[in-house]
Length: 267
Image (cartoon, rainbow, N blue to C red; front, top):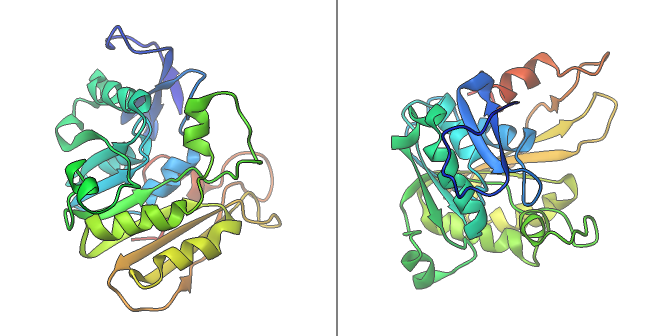
């Protein structure tokens, strides 16, 4: 990820940076200090979508749009709706789509300001119709309240988990996904139980991949992928090592995933 001057942006965009992802194949307009700034988590989540994917995808909790645009960058036939409940972060997503460096992606992406925790009729009225997406990805706020106290309310909304969040978000994902539609979630390892409980009975053929800083270190993230209505059991895939065994640089596979040159699950 690299930064560039914020040229050609809407003048009202709050303090921000303009950052290149996928080696400059798309750009993200994101808050300079407040709110959530995207990085490797978003790239790993996007990489969970199979490379041949060409359907309609919902990015729940999209922030400024990093994961959704990373899918578009790697999957040339995909279309993405960036779903974000915070009007401020949705504004950054709009600025991202308006950036000249994203002109080649803009006609395949849109922003929807909506709360994915809505249910039933209210969810549909907010723009999330049942059975309308082929895939749902999500990077929920997964820090416990005591983990990361912050006076920044925008950052707190993006980072701190509410009670029952996995259940609510995955219930909505199951409602808006088409039959046999896909789901991908990135979370912390200690949240695996709650995540699998929420998936159970809705999605199946579940695959889990752990992300480790190095081979000798404990996992710091899990990525879970599943299919709506499938009945296959959980499988555990080979892990991703972020760094090589020696040195501080990224491992070759990590570098390819981070730059949109490979999928996380090898498809």
